[in-house]
Every structure is written in structure tokens, then in C-alpha cells.
Image (cartoon, rainbow, N blue to C red; front, side):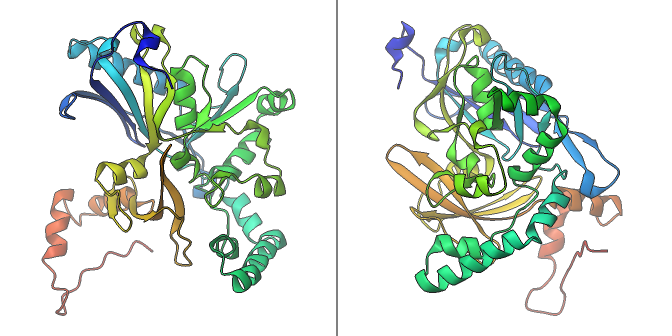
Length: 378
């Protein structure tokens, strides 16, 4: 870990928090008492293409997103009359399962950022989930779980691929991209989700790591071993050589920004997935604490303490955060289409202002006969 002396001068006490969601990127500056001083915000442009939902591509231009991040942080420092030496550390919260590949030698991206909403691998996931290979994994998991009652075997019993996972979206992208294939053969292909890529860019190409809470939702990570799932990945020919080194969420210096970016180096002190960040920020640090987050999607995250929780009811075991002296897991359930459904309901005249929906729900008696339902199935 780097100390303040490594910079040749004393650091300040302010903190910069960067939040990269699906629709917006925000940079916030907090003082030493965690009071918000100021913030800068811009919308993120997601580019959609594809004639059908199963073939929908949802991508972000990496150069535009990177320029937005640098510009927002620079603007934040300027309008608060601070320079980078006033910042004791930077934290990053970002959307999960959005990935990119690039050339290790020059940092040039091979494609746009493939977002978690991208559906290019939906058909491939269906094929694998209906294959004898996955059925065999489920059967073996069922038998072993009966014999051992192991949570890991229980996970194998219900295992299936989801399009939201990175696994097959990466493989489909690789199959379509000749440059990626060439770099992979030469050992020059780098891969990472948004946390990895941003830290790589901020460090000037020096640091390539993956933070565990982000890694755990990709389908590439085994929460029961806290390592990449090498055995399963090799089973369907995922090139494990591209996987970045796993690190911590905080508690050590993850990276130091290139001093050319903001005039002086800034410590990247923390990183986490967006939902885990919400859980931590709400003070849900104790086992069985719960947070519900409503945004582009709806998420329920339960702190399950020091052990991953395996469920047959649709909850997924994820890493909450990993510090040098602490490891927490969460069980997560989600609905990824909340915002789309609400926009559609508004468009057909069910309400004119989304803020009235709470009153609409509260106006109906749960104990009586006046129920309200909105079924988005037709």
C-alpha cells in the first residue's frame, strides 16, 4: 500500500466518489465529515440496435464515457477551487456486468462497452441451458447435494446461464471479432468489466485488477472459493488467460491515477458494484440487513454475513465487499425491467407523474377487496 509520503507531499482530506449507472455518470466531492460539497453529472448515451429483443445490442462508446469521467472530475475540482492534492482518495461505484476488451500493448479497445442490457447471447444461453452438459451438471449437483448438503453442490443443482452474465456475451463477441481472436492468440487480449477498465485507464495502463463484488455477478466467479471459476470456464472453452487479477474492494490502495489526468496523482481507494455500494452506504453491515434499490431495475440485497447463501428461489449469492480483514456476502434478487414498465404505464395514461404511483398503491386496502394489479404480460 502506498503512503502519503510516496507522493512527496501531504494529502488533503476530501473524497471523490464516482457513480457510473446505466443512464448517468456522477462525480461527487465530500469533505472530511462526509458532507456533500458539490457534484457534477452527465447522461450516458446507450446505443441500441437490433430488430428483435433476442438480438438487441446495447453498447456504450468507451471513448465518450472515459472523456465524460475525466471532464466531470476536472470540473468538480475546478468549481470547488481544489486541486488533486486536496483529495485523500477516490471511490468508484459502477454498473455491473458491462464489459470491454482491449489491446494490452496500447490500450486500444476492440469494441464498444457491451452493457448488461445487451441481449446478443440470449439464444446461446438457451442452447446451453437445454444441452445435456448443463443437465448433467444439474444432476450431479443434485446427487452430491443429497449426499453432502453442500451449498456449492446445491448451486450446481440449479445452475443455468443468464444473458445478464458476462460469460456468453463475451464468447459471442469474441466469435464475431477477428481482432479479438488475433490478440487472444498472441496473448495480447485484455478483458474487464467497468471497474477493471476504469482503474486500468485511471492508472495510465499500469493496473489491471477486478474487484470481487463486481466480479461475483459476471458468471465467471465462484463465490464459494473466492476465485475465478476456472473449472467451469474451461468446460465451455472460455479463455481464462484474459481474466484480470482479483483484488480487494477497499482497505488497500487499488491504484494511483496518472498525474497527467488531474494535475497530481489521486489514490483509487475503493471500488464496488452499484447494488453492493447501496447496501454498504445504507449501513447494512450486519447479517440479515436488507436494502431495496429502485432504479433502471429493482434489486433486493440481503447481507448474509461471512458465507454465501444458496437459494432455490431465485436469489443469487454475490460478494458484498472484501476488505483485508472482512468479507461479506449478499443474496440478491432482481427485476431488470422496472423503469421500462413504468415508462410504458405512463405512456398509456395510467398516470401522468410517476410520483403519484405510491399514493395509488396506498389508496388500495390490503385487507379489503380493493386490490390493485398492474400485469405487464400482454
